[in-house]
Image 1 (spheres, one colour):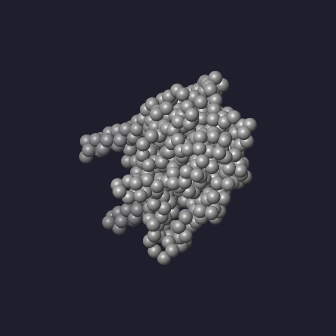
Image 2 (spheres, rainbow, N blue to C red):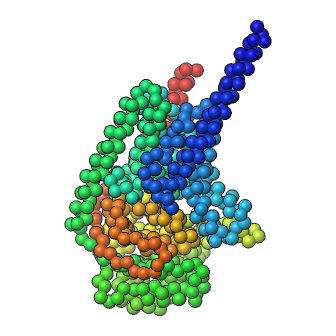
Image 3 (cartoon, one colour):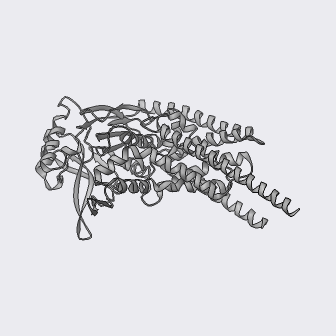
Length: 518
């Protein structure tokens, strides 16, 4: 009998081991498929329809045999996702910036991608707080997704890059929901569709009822999007307009590095200036279009004013300031009018690594670009036209343009330099992830970029024009100026905070139940 007992235990152990191996194989496949979906829905592929299915493989990982299994599987998914989305364009950019060895590049790339850790947290939260009912699971899973996206966007050096909802920036109807809850509201809707599909795939009691509730929410979102989009377009037709020229010389880095190069670049921008017949309210040049200190070169400012025929210009250029008794370099946008500097905006959010961090390379540790962050006013007045300037990747941080709009900005103006990226995925992702700012705040967004898309995004999220970032030129557009405040402009990321609170509440409830059971 003893021998028979050992045989039964051994059979049970083998059964558990076989089940664990089967789950491991399934988890590996699902993690790979989920990462492939996420990579494919962003540029360079841009298969936006996959947004509704992208979280499905992750949700199908549950229930997991243990918390460690859930964490490991979602960590693998997150690492594959991050590397697939950013590695193809970031690897050459890191090499160009820092001249790193392949090993240093790989280590820095993993650090930038956060090593899949946010998605490991996703797996842990999904496992630890997994509700018993199908309906609760359908609502809990997208709340966790949003909570993790918000968390990875706000940790030190975190960015809201490649949020699930940002892939829906080009969706003409459902994208309108962003004026309620920002990109996080769109992430919730996409994750909700996948969570409902996961319940249907698993089957079980009340899966169909839970899916019906999710479908009702999605139909309501589409209905809101249709009505709101039509209302915004009607408002755009009635709104006053501003005529804006976006000048993009598309100058590669190799032609921008010396003072002589900077003067030659200035000549190229002035040569592209619209003629005197163009009645313009604003001319915009990209970030660092003039790689010289304008405040210390009034003759250059006067030259720009003469070449621009006195029209207001917003021009990207560096400047030095004295802070705490020491000189500091800042990336700035200068408002030049009537041959003089009429205002300056200093970049508030610096680019990690490239502008703020030390780097390895060239035989040891060396200092990367030592910029300091700016503070203060977020609005510039260009002859009565109130501008909300955003420099480079500040566009992907919704709190910055939101502050500008709340301070009275009528027009969002993004000046950017994407010349560190190869043409393709990097510049296109950068533009895509910022497009929702126009919908969230119902403001026209104009973007002048060097070696990246130069574009106009209207308050309904549609593009009035966009360039490929390769051919120099000047784009002129009459853009509507809206002045109301959306719910998102008023309350910001309150929807994301509701999701965080719901997740925390669910975890606390589960902990109390386990304590009572013990």
